[in-house]
Length: 169
Image (cartoon, rainbow, N blue to C red):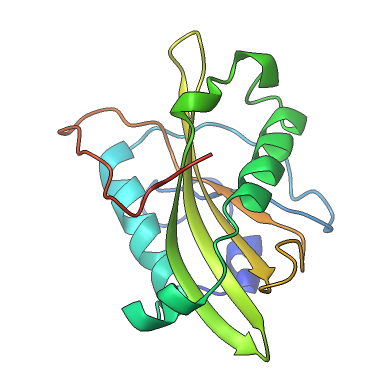
């Protein structure tokens, strides 16, 4: 299983040319982010599966009881992307920003670990997709910092409509 420590030890070119770009929070910067577009659609799908496995996807009933905290990871992801020089905040089209909760696991009394898939679109046609991991409670969405993982740019495949569970933020 790929752990946080395993992610930190990855170097460019590991795992048959597939890389993971990690933008750490509250940790020493691991190095400069470099875009890697090799196997884009496959990498994107594989990373979602790995992230779901890492953060233990709960039953659908658990999702219904956990708080909807899409705004906190969305806003923090935007800040991390800006700080990394990957996006210009004024160019983001807010109406086209989408946040979809992939997983929410109860890890304590009124404490949940949540994973979101967030897509940002800019006025110049750029799309950046990230996976976030953070903790939330029913009273406070910002119970932790937000780990942000840049997925990739979509370079092919069919456009799929978002499910009804998609959150507009």
